[in-house]
Length: 449
Image (cartoon, rainbow, N blue to C red; front, side, top):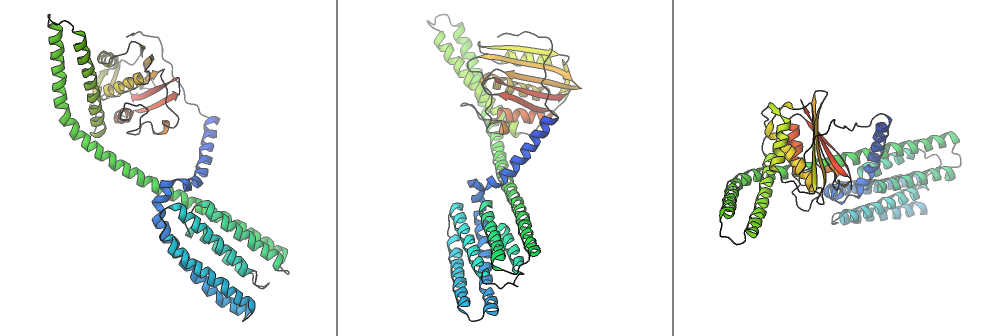
């Protein structure tokens, strides 16, 4: 184990300015795209499936009633003509299909069946309405208002994937525009432009409204999921607190007995080979230390934290930590301390936080490397940095690194860093990290000095 001091300390400044603005714009664009990608998340769609089915069945009933009532309009416009009878058959078919749809979606078990059946139904309604509108007289222009209302129905009142809302609406709008252009001979150009702009406007507004609704639904889903996770962690914490208290006493007795056994073996002269016995005891000690660390992490995460601030010699705490930790021979340790010897903090909490970071750094270097701890004073803050030259943190883990039960190690509970974050924040500080796969990781703690 190697300890030696170096002059100075290096700090990495956060990039800002234009780069930060570009990154912010990119995140906003990515968020807008994700509003549509929510539709592909199985747990999200399954969460809303029951309510979506109930809402859709009500809307389908209303659409069926509307389709039937508009037969009166057909009679008033067309009279008892073959076209009227043809529309009666068409409307009867759509009403029958609506009845089938109501029964079918009430029995679906997954959102894929629901989405596909809803999409086919919407397209059938679109085709049916377009066929009906082909029979309208030239002066029957107010039906554009009905089209606008129908578009909002597609987007907002029938919950399904955004693309399944958008396609029927666009087909409906395009079909109506073609009917107006080629069937209404006396339709004037200003009125045509008005109709076109009206359809464009209503599609844009409806699409934005639908995206906002999808985003709102996604936030609801996230909040419910987070609340369930919080409740689960609270239950784990309460259980861990009780179990940890019950385990710690017999565990301490085991540690004491191991110490006595080890001492007795070392002092016994007539044993032929003490090496094997001492190695076994050392292995048991390591495992009991690991159990003790798990209990400490569980209790630190579960128990209320009330810091007791005193004047602390940070250099002394760091030295004590390294005296109690077994450092592998393949890991070189460097300590850099500069103008930060005395700070006002809770010695127990800061000791636990640094111990976890140091252990985490060593576990990240199974084949050896360099562990570096630097500390300095900057703008009335104590800045402590623990870095390693280990494996680094995978990109997919970084956003949830401080989340409980998230770990990259085969042997680990994923509580160490969550505990560190909780301890640091209890001391009115903050913790950040920088990592690159294959090159290492650095954690930085900032505390009020």
